[in-house]
Image: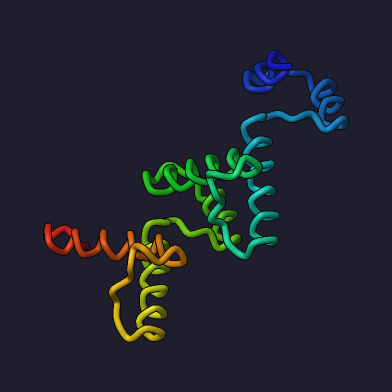
Length: 148
């Protein structure tokens, strides 16, 4: 299989053999095939969940989450192809997840304030445990002058 790919690259594979391989759906680039498989999984995840923030702590989605994280890394280092970017943009992928997460927590805090009249989220409140941690982190970052 890899020898056939090598012959194609060297342009020494006969047109007859190339045609035969095309006729059976031969995969010329396994990397492209893998990328397309993961992209289709992401599209299905998006269709089911309405977003592309695939959880990394779920055994069923762990591999897809790693792939999405890697695509974000490639995007942020400007090494992801424009074709891949265009396809991923069609899923409304959030390239900068930390900003999305911050905005999400901020919106939760706004809702909390509307409901409670203050922003003092108690860490004892099991329902708002993660929001309380986020608020605490924001206050600490403010004190250290590292709030961006």
